[in-house]
Image (cartoon, rainbow, N blue to C red):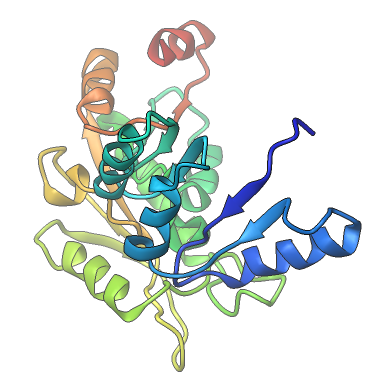
Amino acid sequence: AAGNTIVLKPAELTPLTAIELERIALEAGLPEGVLNVVSGPGRVVGERIVEHPDVAKVAFTGSTAVGRRVSELASQTIKRVTLELGGKSANVVFADADLEAAAAAAPLAVFGNAGQDCCARSRVLVERSALEPFMEAFEHSVQSLVVGDPLDESTQMGPLISADQREKVASYVNDGAPVAIQGSAPEGPGFWFPPTVLCPVSNDDRAAREEIFGPVASVIPFDGEDEGVRIANDTIYGLSGSIWTRDGAKALRVAR
């Protein structure tokens, strides 16, 4: 609409959706060359796109390390850059919240796309006085999650993208924090990992500090509003967040 053509480079392990989008765009009447999908390794194809003098603007979604590299390369030709990088977002549940509703919503906030989502609310901060009833409801929600074939409309969570990613996710679960809840995962082909909840987790633990990018939630107890805000903000990441309370004034304070 603004007269700009676009080069879209999907992640090298997931090119098919972008290629299908390009095909649909051509079928819908978009002229050839307006939307261009180029697949391949980021270190080859991605860097060439970022460095190319005819590219005026770069938008990148991915890891912090690669985002830093994109910024460095784009600076050589003074390109405008938009980066959406890692996340370790907090889902803050206060004792006065509707705990059943919070526990029902929490699984898909973390486990959607098998947790491979930079906006995943993977740190679940729960006020200590509500921890036990929340965890009971949360367990029911996690165990009810339908894990299976992504092409089945009833499925709520599919597999991870690769064997390497499954191994990385497992390393966090085996790193010391107690496994409080673990759902099911299918047998057979696919890089399956069950939805997993660690509790209690300290915000200093590796599982709470680093972006796991998999179906693992870290439940972190807190005492009082001030501590909840401090823990929620104690991260190098941003992006997303949720607040559960029946107190509207508290919700606005915490959001600010």
